[in-house]
Image 1 (cartoon, rainbow, N blue to C red):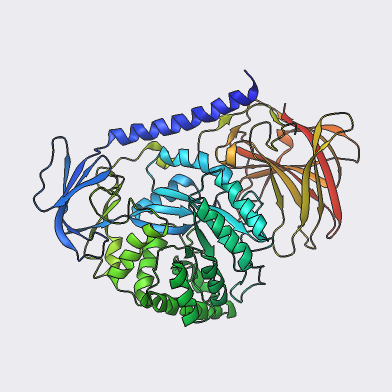
Image 2 (tube, rainbow, N blue to C red; image 1 turned 60 degrees about the vertical axis):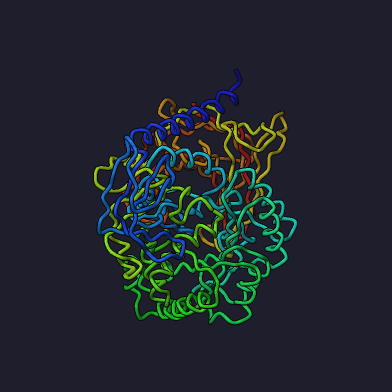
Length: 600
């Protein structure tokens, strides 16, 4: 049996083990429950009413005042409590740079806040499958993944590689990019179309209307909704004319005008204002230290426009939906969703209107007709709280119980799976050969997708990476780059050790890395691991091919990315990627070639 088949079976086994664990967790809980004597806010627009709700097989089986509990059905007395549909957050980033940073802890935060459906805008398509399997193995909200697209040097592409954020600048490129990412089964598309940086930084590039319209047309052919990063009134008009399904940020450079309203109505464009991320003092209070600065005053002006535009668009009949941009600075997971509801009310919506935005209307924005309201036949994503949040929106913070697809995941007596306390997946055993660059599909010998990596920003290193023929036979990887003008200019190639760099690899049975290499650059080998841990060692290279052995003992811990802390010690069971990085003088051209990367 060849090694490719073995690797495929290993991935299938991992996924199967995770999913089997999820089934085991679900069967251990009481799947059927009768919630009695609740005050039901059903998310249909109907006034709250007293009733009981029967949940069977993960769905709402009956709603009424005289319901009997079938045999083996658990009963919950909800007297004095409100029963709501589970909340949504349609705009989050499950990023390793936030706190908490790891998937189970982020999931815990959303469940504790009563959020049962979340959209993650942060992951490369390669990470969808392993992250979906991981989520199925623990108590978690239903997470929908966005495929990301932007223009070259646009927002979202100013730091990311093209596997994370596709770069498109023509209708043809946009159509091809949507077709390519559709193979990964994303849940929707996130297009970064507006480069305005809030008058606090140099603007990025913006996507032209013809490109965006082609992107939307192909996405809709693939049955995918499109959300856009749009923050200016004029760009909002562009997005609406192109037929996008929702603006995922506030337009905040001025008031929404009649032309924008008309276009959004005409094309059915919804509005997810992400007020929480723009709150000048930040949801976690971290922005208060900058009060009085010019940047803070600009944030205050932008936020005033954002609040005004929520009310203006809502009153004009534009559906408001809930997304927060949580995971970004000062915008914590879970807590920001609840703050967003309060900010909707601050903007002028009633508490009832805010709740509908965070339930029914958000479900419709992603075409999730199976949830968002409490109706017979719908998925039983439910939230029990003390109080009357349709009168006092802050009562939504008084969480008593949360159910996801009929399973209680928050509340007295709930025992979460052990995976909810983990910070990573178990390390995977992998083969010694990382890549010999012989595969025709551009994937590594480990069946992972190679990535490029360079310094970010508007002045960015330009690189081209390609597989080439070696003079002595076989293939090698060639990287050529023109460095940016920055002091930290670099160009790199990333070789993920596991699919999507989600699970760590276990390297403890080897002593180091062996590579064939030649270069006209200052070259380093870097290993990247869980929680931002990094280790690196210089490579002594020349313009001629040579084989280098880099023992793990030569790798030195590096400061965590964008943070401070102790330098990590090498363990070998927490590594996710190998990276070859070239540097030189600012503005110069560099190159390196590598082959036969393996562990020894």
